[in-house]
Image (tube, rainbow, N blue to C red; front, top):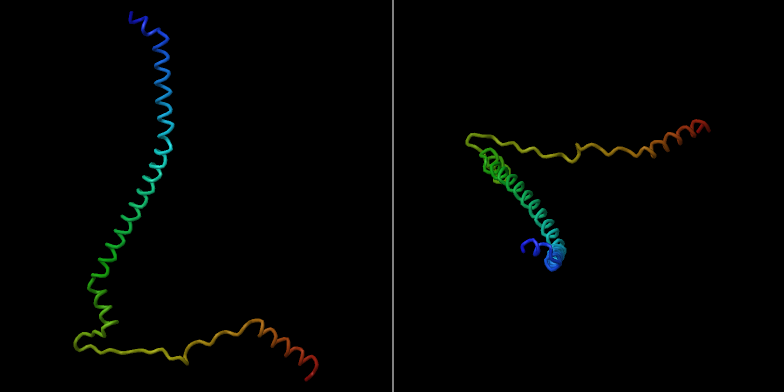
Length: 122
């Protein structure tokens, strides 16, 4: 009897319908799963970037809390000086800055002008 049930057409048809239903369910769910996987990957990338940013901020925090940095900033911004320390201010002189170089085409023009003047004899 069990052998007859396994060989029946109704059981084969029922299994075929079950396979079709499961296949259609997978077909409908597959796009949702791919979108969720992409979002999951994007979120993992964001998490790694945020963790990297956190590490950089922790390093910056250590740097900004360093006594040498604090002393340097106090000297620059608050005009801090130690007792018995002499402070010298150095100002840039506007007249000691290097002059801008002349344009090469203008120099070539001057050379040609002198050459022509010498050729003519003026």
